[in-house]
Length: 474
Image 1 (cartoon, rainbow, N blue to C red):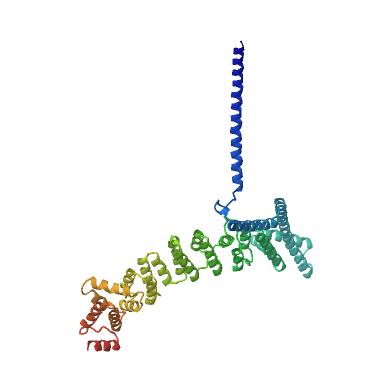
Image 2 (image 1 turned 180 degrees about the vertical axis):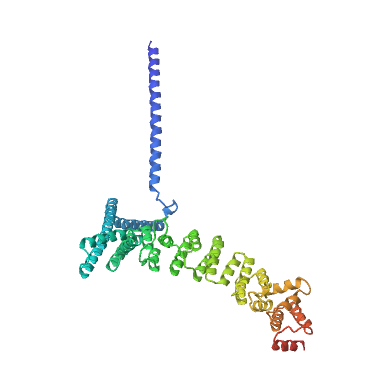
């Protein structure tokens, strides 16, 4: 019996120990999980927002980050000090609405009183005239006829319109009222601006009735401040408000147009510039076109759009050479050539100006083609001389002459003979310049054409040119 009892006791003790071990393991797992959570929380709490682990080990960077946080906190505290509680704003809005309702009520009463005053004045005038005329008519008849005339007058549209016009004019601020209104607008603008409500301030400045805030000084004020991170820059908000406030048929001033476009381009808002130019919201100027062209050169991804806008601006200012240059930079060589050919005020000098800034053999050949019933806008010989004397464009002229030679015998001769815009001495200069550039083959080709024509045709229309050719042939 003792062995059986011992066995039962051992089994019971074993079961208790098993349960105890299981409980201890459970508690141990819970404690490990808690320890891991505490470690993770401690690690996370040691991280600084906006700072990497590598940067957190550098004291200089941490000091710089601390200064940035302090300045940001100071800016937030300054903004907070200029703000008012929401209940105060609601109270002021309620007072404003109440004042507007009272103003509407007083305007209605004022209109009724003016109409009544006008009627009473008519009656008074009739009574005065009745007294001066020694009371020929009975007073009852006079009053009844006067009242009837007043009723008929009130029905007439012209009289009603005149009353409304007078009432409208009386509501316009004049004198001291205008000064008070302007002062109120300026105070409200400064209040919004100082409280960093830049969007509301921009709208108020753009819609300011006298227009005293629609100037460069206000634009500079908006440029001198910055909004919260990720928000639209205040200067761009002001430019947008200005464009919206421009009435149909109106335009922004030239200086505001220029600065507004510069601001929009700096912020990458090209769509706003497209809207402003295409909807005739701006005063177009050469400086504005130059800004668009420079931006196109610095930003190839926007080049096509900016150059298109620049072409519109230059054409509106009748700057044909810059319009053609913008088209060439977009690759529209044929379009630029046709554009210059169909402008009566475009000269050969303008064509050379475009060629020197956008060298192109195709453009040079197109400008040398005869126009309908007229000579070519750019004489071949004159163009060759101008290009050959310029070290940067000598190769373009040599390529042109080489194409004439490569096209076959007689082509260069035909070009020289049909070049009525260039005299013989011009082609002699071409030959001399080619010789100086070690292109004796081109020089001989030009001189041979001149020599072959010496006995059959006078190439120079003037006596001096004829004597020069005679000297050369001798």
